[in-house]
Image 1 (cartoon, rainbow, N blue to C red):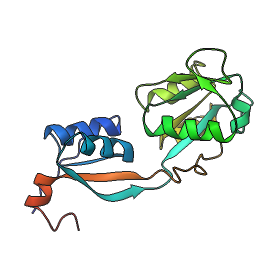
Image 2: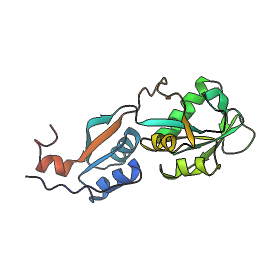
Image 3: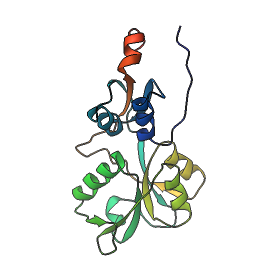
Image 4: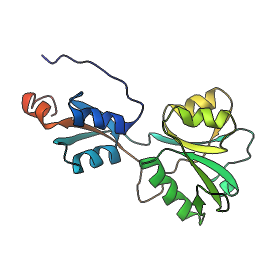
Amino acid sequence: GIKVQITGFRTGLQSAQAVSGGAADIGVGGVEAAVTTIAGGTPATIIAGCTNGGLGWMARKDSGIKTVTDLKGKKFGVIRGLHELVMKAEFAKFGLTSSQDPGSDVQVFYINAPPAVPVALRNGDIDAGSAPEPFPTIAEQQGYAVRMPPPYDTPLLNLPRALFASHDFLTRYPDAAS
């Protein structure tokens, strides 16, 4: 008895903002988007994890980059939030420094939306980057990117996505979340 309308959002944060603003009852996004929204006062609850390993690192096919240590002297594109945290943890593990300014081991370019990461890679604006699936897989299939080892051996583990619902929805449809 629940009418479902699916709305696509470019980022988990946009999904969380829709739940926060009442435009959506349920959202999907990185755990950090859900936690930030709930910690900011939105009456919502994380009701499930919905993916594991949904983040991928890719490099331009002609860059010679195969491992994290190959990123030294290169430009890395990343989305703020979970992708940024994973990048920092992975770089620290391999002793790499990073900054938006030239001069660190890896120059970081913050990219606003997941679909823009493979575009920046294809255009040569970055040498490698982090994006949620399916973007790394599509870039690889289109022939301009190669996959890097998944960055799942960090304290953040395998990077689950969260399914979260407004308290209003959970009150109206308690059986739907179980």
